[in-house]
Length: 273
Image 1 (tube, rainbow, N blue to C red):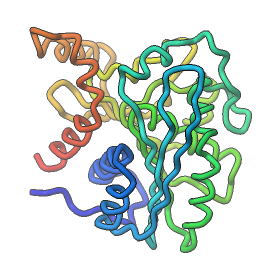
Image 2 (image 1 turned 45 degrees about the vertical axis):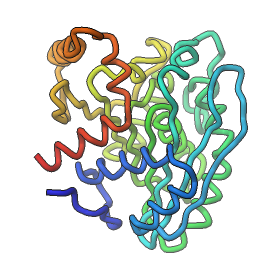
Image 3 (image 1 turned 135 degrees about the vertical axis):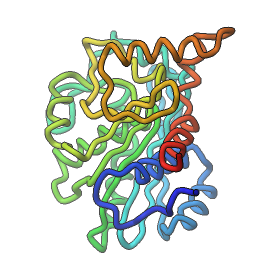
Image 4 (image 1 turned 180 degrees about the vertical axis):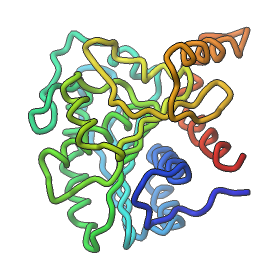
């Protein structure tokens, strides 16, 4: 049985909506004409593209996102990048962090700079499209997840008239310090959902204790089952099981699990099984 169509009247978490947010995050990787065509098929008649040629002092590709709007819902999808291109700078803790949104804690310099390069475009699109009191949702995979989280925080702490109704991230890296994570947890109770697929390498970077995750996590185990809670010891055992799934290339599991396709497929299977 196929997944039901995207419900534009959604106002709270559900597994089908998480699936559609994963697809929206995946769509951010596509060319602009593909994004427009797909958005229209999903019922979003207006689309704005956000792009910069910003080049930071580490190997990060151009930052891109898009915003699509219907009469009832607005979704912004932030594009991510591949693990091979971000692993080095995700691990780099030598660059001083940047002040967090609204002066709340600190964030990784690369994330702050990347978001700043497109944030004015995103904010302008939201202000332009939100003419019917539509709900606002952010989503992103990998780097895009970090940008979605931080963009939501910026709106919350700096733009009170543009409230984000929910944030869905997939394979998001650690993004901020403990203070901002705590402030974000409080601000987005029941509105921030971070999905991690088994041994996905990116959520394990940058290293602790300098950087932290927000609390709410949805874990996809080695068998593809979505779990809302996973005890520490059980989680460690499950990750070990994932590593040994491919006897010829066990380390490849960490990169393979990061694919946005893995997230989309797992969520679909959890809905339809």
